[in-house]
Length: 337
Image 1 (cartoon, rainbow, N blue to C red):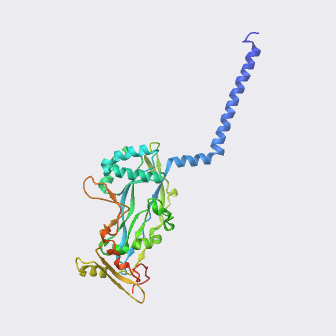
Image 2: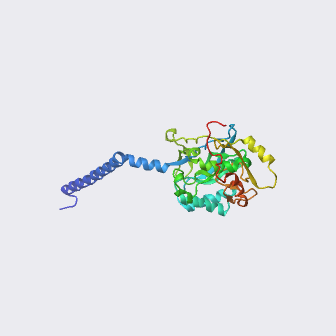
Image 3: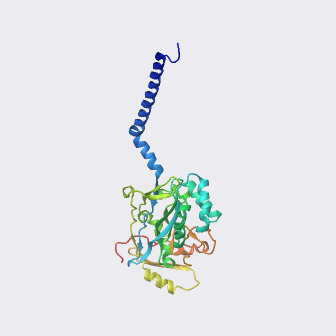
């Protein structure tokens, strides 16, 4: 029988038709499962790959003296960060391209990489306090740096840092060693918390609650646009703190305090325990604007150091007014007396 016999040709056609219909049925079943049954799972995966969460730091509560004068407030500053990269080598290459603009040396790059290893799912802070000139230079070259994120954030500011810093304290970045403490359980790694003084004592109420926003990124890691407002969670500012400290009296005592002497002056109401001035010498050397890190001034200097409320040799002196059985001014007062 010839291979082109009509009976054999008809059988081959039926076989081919069955294969085609079987393939089409398989495609329909797979399409139905992907688009209908597993639609939610694939949509979530797609949104996760496309959107990146960006923490929004909450403004800390303002600290005032008994007359309402500001001891600690917030000012707007710029933070330069990078979105999480696919791998560490890609992040390192981006940091080397950023180095000439933001003045990063090898040690600063290594610190950024350490932050990335700790929280690989969050933006990595490269320059916590960027100047307007640096921000402008980065904006002009944004396409050269995948994942570049420039965000305005509240920075702590102490108008009279030399007078009341030993009482007000300062804020700093949460470290790995502090994560085990119960009081910082709600603080994300890299967030700011009170390290000393009133900032530490009332950190829970002053800190507030961070928010979050989402940005859409391209396949190359560039920020394309802001996510819809419905996905944004606004930060909750911290509560203000009204103290019994008298800043004018504090300033007067600092003026009449004998130069070159060590000591402390504390004035308090023995009936209520409220303190008004508390002056100690030597005083603080902390800068007015207190962030997690500060940089040495000078061309090419990028060594970061942690902000302290006093230098090591004088650390005991600034705590003279807080030692002993008498409490130092740490209570929020409903009214000055």
